[in-house]
Amino acid sequence: MIWVDTIAQGILLGGLYALFASGLSLVFGIMRLVNLAHGDLIVMGAYLILVLVTLLGISPFLAVFIAMPLMFALGWLLQRYLLNRTLGDDILPPLLVTFGLSIALQNALLEGFSADSQRLPTSALTTASVNVGPITLGIMPLLTFGSAVLVIVALNQLFYRTELGRAFRATSDDATTASLMGIKPANIFATATGIAMVIVTIAALYLGLRANFDPNIGPARLIYAFEAVIIGGLGSLWGTLLGGIIIGVAQTVGAAINPEWQILAGHIAFLVVLLVRPRGLFPRAHD
Amino acid sequence: MALLQTHGLVARYGDFQALFGVDIMLNEAETIAIIGANGAGKTTLMRSIAGVLRNDAASVLLDGKPIGTRPAEEIMSQGVAMVPEGRKLFPSLSVEENLLIGTYGRKIGGHWTLETVYDLFPILRERRHSPGTALSGGQQQMVAIGRALMSNPRVLLCDEISLGLAPVVIKDIYKAIPQIKAAGASLIIVEQDIAQAIAVADRVYCMMEGRVTLSGTPDTLSRDDIHNAYFGAGH
Picture 1 (cartoon, rainbow over the protein chains, first blue to last red):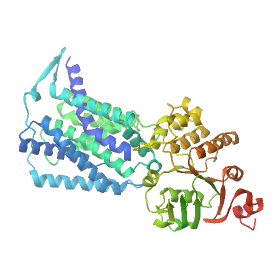
Picture 2: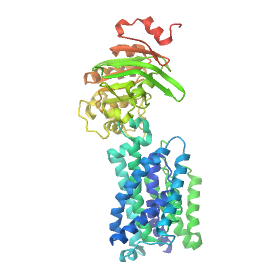
Picture 3: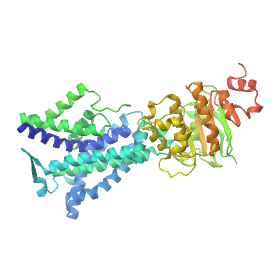
Picture 4: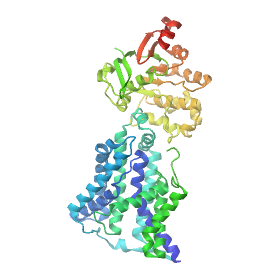
């Protein structure tokens, strides 16, 4: 029975990794931009929620709704006035600029908040659990997984049921021809990054409630996000969720065998999938 | 006043100059044909008018106002639409989504709606949920034309709409031109197929090596004039 419990915990952990990865997947899927600062932006989101909680004395679950529009605006401006300038046939400029952004963010957070680790204030909810048959599931991991599924359902609805979604897909296919339809690719890319930052904020909430964070943990979150995106197939949102689950299950199973193997098991699962399906489990048909 | 005009239009790709002072004029309710061999600069002229290539402000005029430096999305919102060479359908969009993207961000009134486009090309109604790129070349061209029409343009730029299509399909596509004109659009048709272009045009411009070498109405241009302007007098 311990294995059922281990796998269930892994699936729920996969929800957190899917949240880390969804924003990255969205941005890559639309503009082929690999944002190396993604993990640091998640950490920055956690600090923003912490500041709001401290200043306003409100619950993190309330603070996240104030943080989301702020992060959207930051993402929109970042893409519109910095990252759009790096897009083109050469993939190196966006990598260099987002790498620089990552370092700048880490140092700014160190300067502003010190290297001390922080945590969002917890409540009874964070330690509550529910019995499902023979296994016990934490409310917080369930909320995290539910949020990941909701985010992916919402993104799919946005992509396939709205005019903005059509514009996202058209611009992703061919930005020049999209501009002949009256679409402004620069604004579409900025909106996509804004939405990615809203997801980053949700990921930041659960990161901050689940564990301690400090200015230097961004790159490790980026690696989990990358692995989930690549396992799922670049640009596939449901694939990203599955990628997160595969890493989560591999980590919990690895930890159950030997606690030292937890992180390594996730990376090995990633390498195995990469070996068997180099383009991921659900690659886009027309890349 | 001309609806659309180019004045001494010059275009370059890096160091390579593709257009050398091109002057053309399109009047309201008129169809003009731009003919010329490969490399004559026809597509570059279309891309310059559409704003894909930027020019001097006053080198392209719409309603007498300079638009040469405006980006494509702004020019399209002023009533210009383009059927690009090679159709350029969006692979991740269905036929119907490809048509709907032609109205992006705008509430557009006018003759052309999904229903009237489907009436013009009935096969598209049957294939509305198929991926745009799963269609035959002729059907894809119909989608590309329908997509441009969805914005109810005043000026429709058609770049090589017969390229790579079977003669019977070309005939079907060209059958739609009178209906498009009747709905109020003025057209610039770029073609290598001289006979087809001349059959629907009110005026013809012939281009060679980035310059207009001949212009006139179809009935005033002789076969030899066109031949010389198309290939050069030495041929």
